[in-house]
Length: 481
Image 1 (cartoon, rainbow, N blue to C red):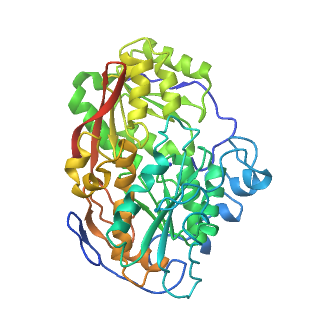
Image 2 (image 1 turned 45 degrees about the vertical axis):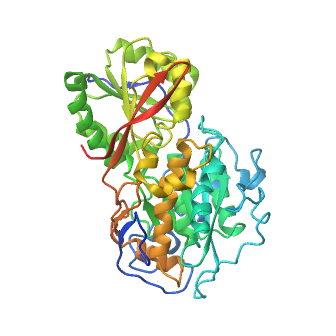
Image 3 (image 1 turned 30 degrees about the vertical axis):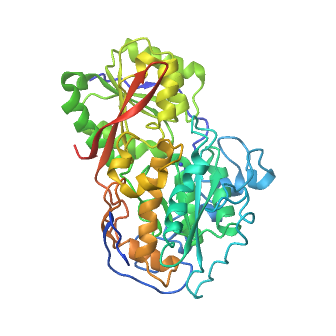
């Protein structure tokens, strides 16, 4: 083991929080609870603490972030020095994406006014269920331009079949620009303007943590693919629809030892030093002896990335786990001048746009890179879920369609399981008791009132460079190591 830990940069500012009734064919779900009480908040006993009632300290919506001691929505974005909510946002329009029927770019366009959300103690939800999705469509890069269109795949499909329990489903997408403060603002807009029934984090660990805690304070269910557990474990309304990074750490360590043998003794982890990666770092380092650590700023400079690349080679690293924004990883690869096998976990690292960009720019490093993923590659997805194959028939689709279907379809089945008398509290309580929810592409999910991290499987993707481009191929599905 290399005993020294190379600290390449200190972060000047800590980053705040970082994207059944009527079981159907191809869906396996058993649920309990089935609460149908009215109201917009969460029931006591639905699981964990509630920031809105003081069980979780430092509610972001009330002025304090547990990770960094300040609220991006109330006092500025530590990544950018200012809060778009306080002084205007230079980015994209606040909420966009159109409705499931192909409406306009704002929530009020294209499909008529969204139904009002029921007040606490009010009636069940109205005839349309809005799912609000935020993601770093810009900022983390390179996310494909197909993201907004792909988000409409599931609602368009399920609406063509009559909706869910007689309700139409609408997805509205907002760009959080890979900024926690912007994510909180976008989530507020999705709830208050678009009347979202629930929120979904499409990527970006710090943004998911920030928006998840806002959602808890607002009594809004929040779901995402598994990222950090920091600040999310114990929330009543948060559910991870795939394994968290911390849960995947021991599994990745076992995979490395099994797959690469002696080379596992020269392993490293290169990660952005946000507090929300600490649980992932701890889980992996504790599970694999001799891991050398290379710490980066959350948004590392080109100089820092180049120095890290040089040190990886000097130190004789053979296997490295990168945990950072894909754009930063690709820049790092451009400066590596030795043979390293890259392995890791994540959401956006396994997208084909990352593989194709890497294969064009840094082929020797990208070719053969392996990542655990909550969704399979395009080579396997249609054969794994006939409904997905039907939904994409005749469309020019890519793997972002796979990724978003793998998140939105199980959420749709959770809404179905909550029954006709749909309320946020009822959704939370019913989802907290769902067992063995498998919808084709997503890992099978089983939750309990005390544990909302209910996945135990991953798909495994490997980058293959071909010609002037590249993509990820699926080398294992629903795997455990």
